Image (cartoon, rainbow, N blue to C red; front, side, top):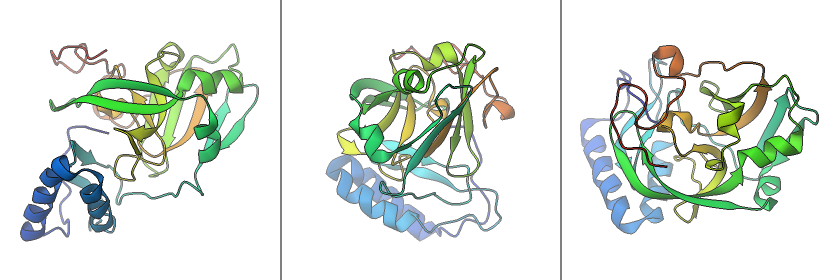
Length: 240
């Protein structure tokens, strides 16, 4: 998730530690997942003391990491479950292995944050959201899809037409690596033609609904349809 938000006050990250973390974030560009894994162990326990939420402003690898929850959530691949319900004929619960067993789709697209920064040529691997919806059997009255995160805070929505695009994935790999906790793993959305706030991290549930319900940032003024280059008052080139 990428979005405009002030850093929470009362964060226990001191200036010296913060500067050190920035250095390691930049180093992650050079040495890859080894530094990213170390950063996850360091950042994991950090929480906002005032309860307003956790926000990381430094880069890890090629990305900046954001979370609106009070701490970074964690769920192992063994314990992961994805529920699909709402207006479907066959509600189901999928394990990580279930998702991984579906025919994979790989896409390489730029990742664009609504705040202006971009990561070029991001490689995603996962399952087309459309295929999971078809397995569950979409009922005729369904018009939209609502997603929730196991951070307990974040929500997003797509129209059913948007959700059925070939470039919208339930993703479990990023740039050739299993999706890490910092990047929203074990499983997240990758809504590649839209701004990053639509690509919900730590995917917990998918629910078919009869109307689009504005997500976390839409309730705070962002466009419900977050197309890159065509929303939120920006003039970025589309990345599709």
